[in-house]
Length: 151
Image 1 (cartoon, rainbow, N blue to C red):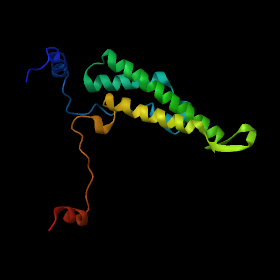
Image 2 (image 1 turned 90 degrees about the vertical axis):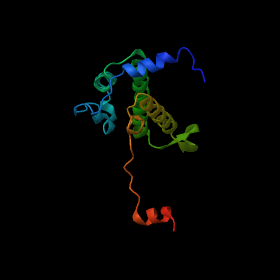
Image 3 (image 1 turned 90 degrees about the horizontal axis):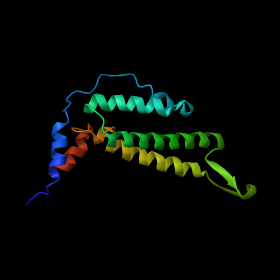
Image 4 (image 1 turned 45 degrees about the vertical axis):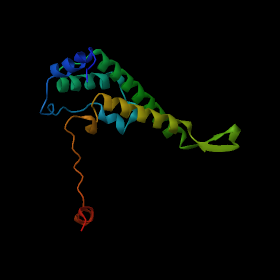
C-alpha cells in the first residue's frame, strides 16, 4: 500500500521530538491551590507553569500546543467561574419568581467545561493515561484472577 506523500511531515516531526525517559524534576505546582480555593485561579500563572512543564517534557512548544494551552486555560476559567457561582447560589435554585425549583444551570456549564478540559489535556498529554508508556497499576484480586483463568 502506497502512503500519501505528505505523511513524511508527521513521521519526521515525531522523529525530531526528543524521547524523554525520565519525568521532569519535581517542581512545586503553583497552580494546584486553586482546586481548593477557586478564587485564587490565575490564568497567567497556569499558562506559564504549563508551558514550562511542556518545554521540559517535550523540548519545545509549537504554535498548536500554545493554542491548545490557551483553550485549556479558557475552559478551566469557565469551570472555576461556574464553581464559584454554584458555591454562592447553591445546587438548586428557584425560577419564575420563586414558583419553580430546579438545578442550577452552572452545574451543566461546569460539567461541560471539565469534560472539554480533559479532552484538551489528553491532546497535550497532560493526563497520565495519554502519556506514552502509561500502564495501569490495577491489581486483580486472587479470587477474580482464578475465575478469569478458568478451570
